[in-house]
Image (cartoon, rainbow, N blue to C red; front, side):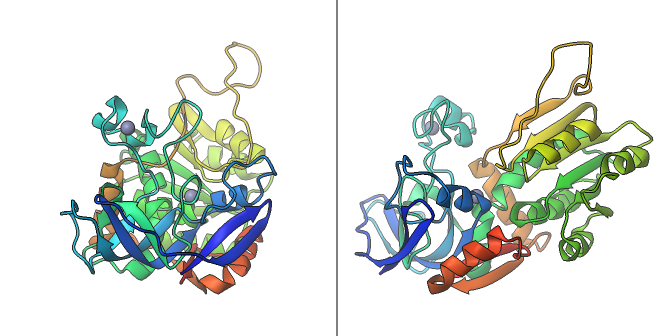
Length: 346
Ligand SMILES: [Zn+2]
Ligand SMILES: [Zn+2]
């Protein structure tokens, strides 16, 4: 079978490799689609010290069960499945409390839990092997477009649920970046909350799409953006900011528009910093602001995403590339040319 391997800094190679053998608790999934995430670009640009060269890329995977191990009762051969992005142990204390994205066994204080496409082979291939516990049945959901639900659906869902108590009728939420995760976040906010949604996005076509997805207002990230947002909220600020970029400029905007007792969810990985000053002086966050460096989500969050897709409340917008054109997809994502989520089709 073919697998897209990261072989060195910036170097991808579509290699011919054996189909993985499965154990008693595993399923072999024939990949229908594999989503391409901004974090894949971060992985692509790691230096020579990166420990995971040789791994197949891809942490958003959907497909059909091709074969199953002797102990697997959850799936039948042929079932459409979503492979999770968070491979938690399921048994440690955080996992038992439903906080699988903070798993203490398959993750650590500095590293999130095991993720396909990083330390183990991911879904940018003809087949992926996964323990049945790390897959969800898709039911009626089309596997050809479902792959991004494993991250672009899951991660915004988790960030929104952790701040959901602030999003009553009359609340305002700001979404920074209408890319793969942002376009799902806006739909989830529109489906599951009464908040007024403001989207900050530099690309004009993406701003137009954000309005269709449920945003009330879209703004370009120009010099007036903070003043405009504060103006709309009578100077008080917005209840929650979801930053799907994470650059210094976007985090500065988040800090400048969030309301007292509001929340900032930092999801993007563009290397910015949000400083909490413990002082009465100078520039500072309003009192009571809750900042979270949001990572992934839980199995319940994944179920919630699948529920919203199944009932038609949200949908992934995909741009498809054949697996053989993966490099083009990476380049297009890097250049900002993807609206919605790029998926690779083996
Ligand atoms: Zn991702
Ligand atoms: Zn665990």
